[in-house]
Image (cartoon, rainbow, N blue to C red; front, side, top):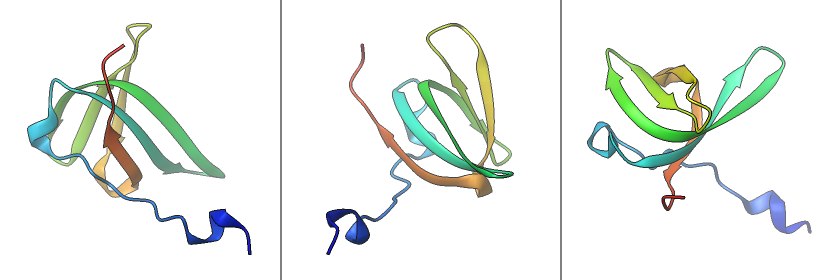
Length: 73
């Protein structure tokens, strides 16, 4: 049995994590997309993650499949 078959995806961030560095995975048409950066806001069901290059990613909460707080760079 593959060790990956038992893996669970968990959303382990909350609005209280605004200001912390997070990694996220979300559903998009045709697959998934990841974003890593500082969680700038979580309002009205939309998360905003600011990437290292300065771009902001808006993520509808209902598309999240996994997310967690990660150490600062």
